[in-house]
Image (cartoon, rainbow, N blue to C red; front, side):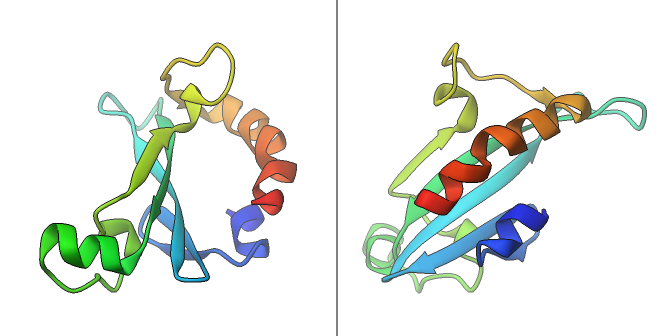
Length: 108
């Protein structure tokens, strides 16, 4: 995703992460369980964690891929946008999400 990379996010699997002052911001793309080659959908999870929380909560070292760490806070993007419900996004709606978040991600 060029937008996230242009903001300094690193890619690992279906997740993008950015570390700022020891706090990791993670954007995770979760595929729909009913996806087929003809039709696919996904949801976006926004997550926050930091090494100390993970190490104390899980009693293991912070993982190389921050997306695999225990999260302090996480929510699906659908809960932050009207009508504040979880929903899967199809390919055609992905551009709509990108436009909605283009300015907001750079403000974080």
